[in-house]
Length: 424
Image (cartoon, rainbow, N blue to C red):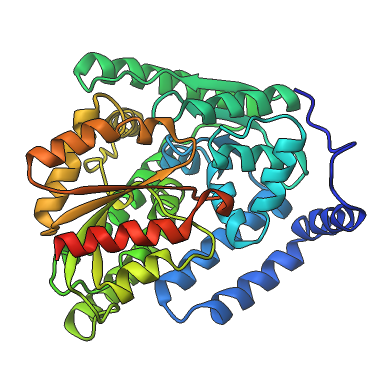
């Protein structure tokens, strides 16, 4: 597929804006200014400031710094592996989610349609393809994808690698968690490290990889403390504010920023538990499956503030892996990949949901069915059946995380109202 904007529907003003945006993104001074100003101007919460600083610093590395090689990967690849190699991770899926807040997702979606991507694909991947075609993605040194969780993301990375003439590697992830699967994936990771370091021209430092695993374990303990604090009734923090945790779990771990972030989040959650909760109106507790709309929408505010429904916990905040063995980091990371709750039989995801519903005393569950996400939406029948047997009502709402055109807010509010009324 030829990825050119020639002949596309972009106006002259849009093209000029793209040129200016590309130059600005490659300015180290612009990133450093943003790192100084944005965390102070846009939030008063310490953990949010840490997150802003981390992702802006990541942006400077990716677009302007060029002191470390860049590894494009999907979110199923553990970030500890990338940081441990001395590389910088770039996930097109995460970039697509962040582009929503930057006002760039519409450009990404429009551009991907103009160059021939079908609209029935997941909008995360369509948006990423459009941003790449528009020249808004960083450089690349190598590409790695895991075969589990999302097929399209791996295919997209392979296409990008082919276009840029860069090496691409696919980890074949078994659907089981037995010893043979662990040995098989560990061998692949060992081979991957040898290949990538050779292709990129860097040396493998076992001590640096152990340090990444050590930092990950420290952040994991803190994140588990946050999860435990959220068992409290009333809920100390808003669940809607936690629906972006997937970006932290798949990018920060293995970096000191994760320890700083979860320390601040733990302290904030504890403060709210001992004082005034973030959400004053709390009538019933719900469990949230999958993601959320990342653009401006009143749907979650209506659910929490108007209806008094608490998102007590959400699937994407799950720390699905055990503590990692620092002495065998590649084997430990293979185990983390295999343990992902969307890897293997659908019953694993259903069991996780039921355990969270019990732990957080939820009376119902909501599944946000993101447009084009086959692996999540395809599990709905199994999830609904298992939850129904346990006496837990499930509401599936159709929407889109990236494209607001696929979210019919009026009808969804009516369905949510009816669901909450039924549970009350």
